[in-house]
Length: 268
Image 1 (tube, rainbow, N blue to C red):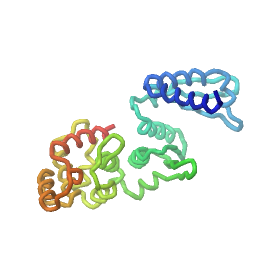
Image 2: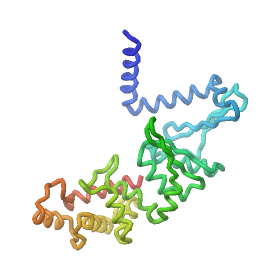
Image 3: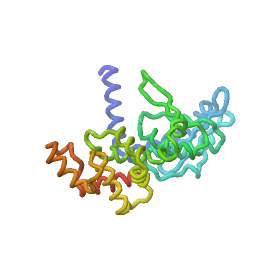
Image 4: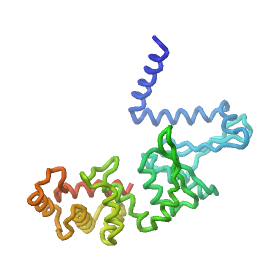
């Protein structure tokens, strides 16, 4: 068997291994245990100054340091204990912790747009410049999320998670032909419409008022602001433009399910 075949087989085996969530958890637990041994002390101590390594495993966070390049000190960090399953949101607990510890700049490396949205939303609560390092290996860029939050203002920064989830993200559906830009523009031009997106995620259970506000937003989104029901919008668009089913807004029942899921995603 060639070296390439062996490597390829190992990669496939590792991908299959990591496809199980419990295996991922066990792997990180194992790494924390291994990195806590003295053999890694010199790497943690560093050449010029000590390195602080924070490792999240399950709901816990451990800090690994070395003061003499011969032993590793492992301590728990209660302030970074979290039940968030996704790194996208848990990252900012660490960013807040770093800013409270005196760091003036926090760099977050991630290819995920969700990270940028959450970062801009929380930038005002983090006392450090929040930088987002993203892109491909060939072309990397560093974006100042704190600066964007300042330029957008508090109102639009607060509404971003709602807009992002409502317009479609990794876990929610999108409106065909209605991109994020149009939804963002609508929210920025109308205080009433922006209020609906801001309220998404404020509580775990959405109110009937929120359902009504989101339905009104969709009526504006499809160019019929005088309508009060998405079912009425569907009827008028079908009668006047003969649009295909996927080009029309969802039914009132379907929109209710969309708002329920979007509200939960925004809440998280």
